[in-house]
Each structure stands twice: as structure tokens, then as C-alpha cells.
Length: 411
Image (tube, rainbow, N blue to C red):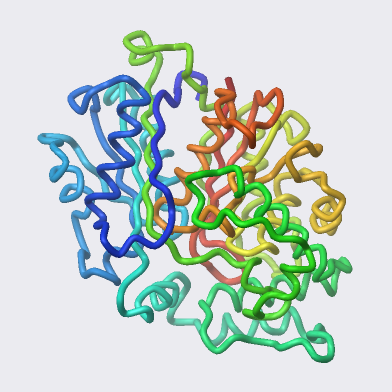
């Protein structure tokens, strides 16, 4: 991928915007990316549009990208719609990179958007019901629940909230198995969330920007033990966009702020034993990305990972090779993943605080990494950032994500 560069990024603030439409959010993010790249709409050769929830929530089942982009002025543009659950926009970026690498056009746009808040709150939660194998839902739930057997909330701790998403149950089961296998603690999970809340105070685009201590995270409302509310990503509205080019395209643009794409990997999983954690889809994808880029975990300056729950960050910090399996909670508790630590993870605040509008999440990670690698992140800047990795998972299949997308970027 040595001939592919990110030359423009844009992002809306994530949050609850009942007065904004998918079209408006798309316009805001894409126009910001165009301005960042100092190009016009007519310079874009193709667009890849990531969206996951507009179909079930709004009934826009098809051609969402054509409709949103035409509305803001794009005409005759080749638009490809991409749905890969929470990895929709990172997959869109992968396709945009592949497109310019193949020479189909020199400059391409990747955009992700979702609007999950609706006056009917049940719609925002219901979208998750279709993100796993619906024909085996009961069987899958039983398999996952069995992983955490024997691990229970301490006396006096509530177990479950009345209303929660399916995926918080999934993360709860996986967290319990990790606790049983490696001794990971509830306090370590709280340390992840507290760290991300601290990071979010320096990100003006984050949905939540309130600092929280470990004890405050533990004292918060229980969602599904061991996960309290601050350990879980919220539903969100928002959009993010990135513009990529090949070397020919770069010759027409400002090279000074271009960020190289060293690897762009989309991977599926295997029919592994659920207890075989070292064959997780995240590890498979990360290994492919490191091999493609010619770098390793020790070369990374920072990471953005798919922390739909605090446990997911623990899991992915291990999959990315930042520590041995079983040590993800430990490095968080020691402060190694905090700004100023050995390997800052989610300086944006992560999904837990920045927000998680499913179709935009992957490109929001890219927005953060590009900002960091340009050394334009302000108070949350990682010193000397040179190489960065993003991990974005989507959906669920058997015992893990259905798809994993890894990007490695560098100056």
C-alpha cells in the first residue's frame, strides 16, 4: 500500500442530533474533508459510502449513498454502498484505497454516517438484533453464556439493566471468560473506561467529555455485570470522511500533510474453539497488517481500537500485540495505555466517550490517527507520533466479530 495516501479528513461531532438528517451529517463531514484536502467535488473519482442503521431505522433500504451525496451536489459520481455493521466505514476506506491503487481513479472518497437516535428509542436498540446469525441466535447465546459460567457479580452488585443492547450481553460473557481464564478484574475494566473519559475531555468532537475516576466508573449504573454504563459505548449520531489518493493524485495536491497508508486489511474469522483466544479474528487481521506494512506492535506510536465496551479494548490491546494475552487489563491499570504511557490507546476517548454511530466509527478512528500523525491533536497529542494503527470490528459471528478491519498509517 506504499502508493496510497490519506490527504483529507473530516468529522462531525458525535452525539444526539434529532434536528439533523443523514444528508446533513454527510454534507458536514464530506465538506470538511474536501476543505482539508484543498480540493473540490469534481476532483473525486469515486465514493464509497458506509452506513449500517439507516435501513432499519428510517426505511432507506437501498442507494443511501447516492441519495446523500447527490443531495450535496455530486453528479455522475460512481457511488458504492457499503454495509459491514460497525466496520462499514473502515471497509469503505479499504475499498477506496483499493480503487486508487488499481488506478481506477486517482482520488477517492470514503464516508461513513449513521443516525441512531430516533423518537422511538426502541429502534436504536433493535438494530443490533440483526448483526449476528439470526438463524442461530439461541444457540450462539448459549455458547457464549457457557464461557462465563462460574463467574458472578460480587454480593450486593446488580447483574443486569432492564434495557441494554444485545452486544453488551455478548461483551459481558466474553469478559467473564477472560476474568476466569486470566484473573482480569472489574477494577481493570473500570481503569480502561476512566482513561478514555480523561482522554475525551480534550476532544471537542466527542459525545461525552466528562472526566471520571475508576471509583466513579465502578459506582455507575450497572448495564450487564461486569460492565457499568461508562464502560459501554452509547448510541450516537454522526459522520466521518476521508479522501485518499495514489501517487499520481498526490502530485496534484499538497504533500506536506499527506499520511501514508502502510496497510489496509479486511479479514474474516475462523470456526475456532471459542476458548482458543490466540486465534481471534483481531489477531489474524493484525498479523496480516503488520506483515503487509513491514512493522510490528513495538513500532506503533498509538492505537485507536473498537472499544464498544471497556472489555473490548482489553481484548484488542492483546490482539494487536501490545501485551501478552491476559495482560490487557493489567497494562491499562498501570497507565501504559494512557496519554504519556508506553502505548496510548484511544486518545480520542474511544467509542465509550467519543461515541459510536455505527457506520461512521471506523473513519472516526482514521480522523483521529491522521490528526495525531500530523501533530495537530492539541492537548491530546501523542508525543512524536510516527506510526499508528486502527482496529475496527463489525457484527458478530459464532464467538467473535464477523469482520475485522485494520489500518496502519504513518507520516
